[in-house]
Image 1 (tube, rainbow, N blue to C red):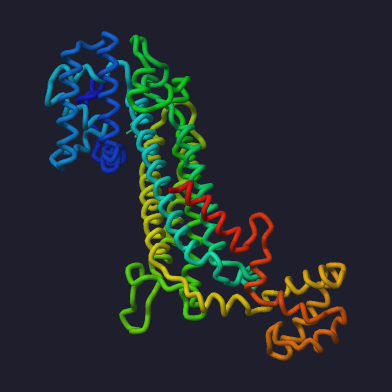
Image 2: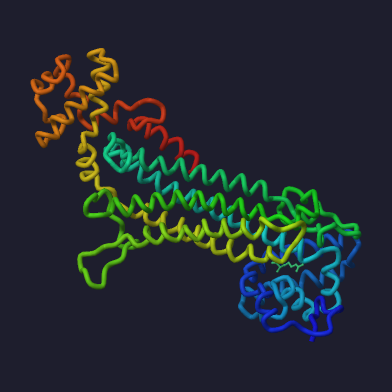
Length: 459
Ligand code: ARG
């Protein structure tokens, strides 16, 4: 038998394979709440414009609420033959209320319907991701506050570079996640235009009020061009782009947690709640959550490439290709939310090992730059000469198997006679970080000021 929604010009039904490739109800049922909200706004607008009677609009509203509760209670019978969430909801509505239900689709199409539903869904995900990011930032702030002046090695090339503070390192991620947050906020603002009323592609001859439906659904305005409204999925791509960058940041932090929790580093201990054991090695405590997070974010990158690929060859306006947008975005959003929650849990629970951080902070001649700076300041050496002399001191210490502060003054003066006793003051890691007072530098007073700034911002 032919389709109840569009079967008028069809003599027969679809092949089973056609149904299988065509149906999206298996996944787009996740848009049920958005679909019903869109239909309610549409029906209310049709009534306000005198296109529907109030009686029909009331019946539609009641009917849609029934459908929604059936879905929420798991009583709804989804049908693959009805293709997607839009037709499933509408068919059930007609079953429940009869002819009034048949009038709902006046002046609209599944094309503007799906564009509206999906925007509403992605908009919600932007909000959820922003909340997730704020929670993670608060967890990082707590860590930063606890160890604002704890010294640790700062790395370049994963080689000891200069001492920094634990608080400074945590706050670096607070800044990164703040930019991710603002990217999502920008994307949300740009996507907040309502496609409903664009109909199939050209608009409609019914005297609809697009301002009304837009306002009803919390959009800033109706989209200005009906072709554009049903054709583009750039809003989903912007979400995926912001999600990808966030995911990249999450993965870098995850990588650091994996390294830091190793027996060789011992910078942090992850909690039992976010670790797993080994079935054979009794001593093991593995950072599986961090590893999985590091791996899972590939799904988000993949979704972005997949959707770009879906879209790149499509002529205006709607093509069925666009139905392939949803699974990618659903999976990416789920992965992002889970990853944010896992990272927030790990960061909230972990304890930094102050002693290990301190012991590592001084290794690898990490205060060599302080020594060179001292030579510039106190002995008036040009920086290049100071750099060279310090390099010779490092080489000497390396030969002797000791650290820079372990060299005697006499040994130092043999390399450069301008060196005096005062040099030992700058060779300690605490002095080193305390001296980095330039704006944005790692000095604890700077770090505390940044923590206070973010604290008042994030609440
Ligand atoms: N399930 C479809 C989608 O997700 C809805 C739009 C269908 N429109 C159409 N003209 N076949 O894209």
